[in-house]
Length: 444
Image (cartoon, rainbow, N blue to C red; front, side):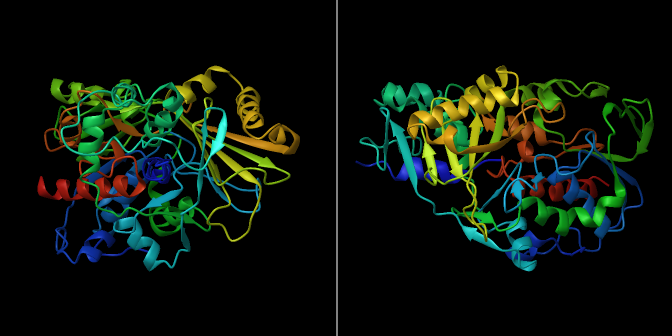
C-alpha cells in the first residue's frame, strides 16, 4: 500500500509460468541454493498473500506437495483490483513498485509489464495555503546518531512547529505509522538496508495483475479459500492444522505468512505455545490502521500530490502512469488519521470528511465535481487489521526473532518478517516466501 514517493518529495523538495532459478537470484547472478534439492514431505502455507503465493510457486517448481490455506474469499492479501470505477483498473492495495532491483522487478521485466516512473509533482497544505515549497527543510529523519524517539517528538526537537504537524504525519504515514509511534532510529536503521532502488513506478494496469498472472496463476489450484486457521498443533512429528469449521489438515512443515496483526491478536492458537521471546517480538513490530479512498470527479481541479491535510496527509492523482486519464484522486490515509476516519462508521461519512477537507483546500470545487467514491479500509478487514508493518520505538531485533523458525517445523514469512529493509513491500514479502522455502530445505 505504501508510497515512498511521498516521503522523497517531502524530504527533498522542502527548501524554501514456473521459472527456476527464482528471478531475484537470476538477476543477482547467484547460484540457486535450491538447485538439485528435493523433498518428499507435505508443506502447508497459511495465507495467500504475496509471500504465501511465491512460497507455493517455488515449492511447485521443486515438485513439493503443498497446499495454501487462505482465510478470505480471494487470494492476494493486501493486493486487490477495482474495475468499472474509472477508465482504468485501480490497485486497491499495493500499487507502487519501489525500485526494480528485486524479484518483482525481474518479473516486470521478463513479462514486459508496462510501468512508468512516478515523478509527479507535490504541493503542500501549509498554513492554510497550497505551496510548492516549504520554508524549512523536513529532511531531518536520516543520518547518524539519531535517537530512538518518535517522529513527532523529534520534529519538535528539531524546531518543526505545529504548522509542520501534518507534513510530518505524512512522512510517518508513508511508513504506515502515526508520527507519534514511528521510531526515528529504528526506521532509519532498517531503511539503510534498502537495496531495490530509489525510484517509484506505477503500473499501467495493476500490481495485482502482475502477481496474478506471473505467480498466482501457477498455484491457484492449490489454494483453499474461506479457510480460517484457528490452531496449529506441532507437538508431534506431523503438524495438525485446524480451521474454524473444525476441519483438519496434516503437514510436515508449515509456512505462516499472515499479517503481523493476526499473530499479535492470537487469532491462531499454537500448541505448544510459541517461545516467549518470539511472542514478545511480535508485539514489538508495529502495524497501524490504514485505508485508501478513491474519489471520482467530473473535472480535474486537484494537483498531482497534495501533502499535509489534517484529515488525510497524502492525496495522489490516480491517473499517473495510466494509458488513459480520468479524474480520480486517491486519499492515502494512515495511522491516527485512518483511525479517526474509521471511527466515523460509514463510507459516506468517511468520504464526506475528505470532501470537506478538499473543499477547504480547493474552494469548494471538490463537492461540486464529486461523482463517486470507493473506500478500501484495511483496518476493518478481519484477516488483515491494518496497513503494513513499521519500526516501533524500542523495537530492537524483533524482526529477526519473529522470522526465526520453530523446531524446524514452523516457518514465518510475510512483509513484516523481512529483515533486509524491504518490509512494507510486495517484493519484500516475496523475498520471505523464497527464503522460507530455502529454510525448509536447510532444515531437512
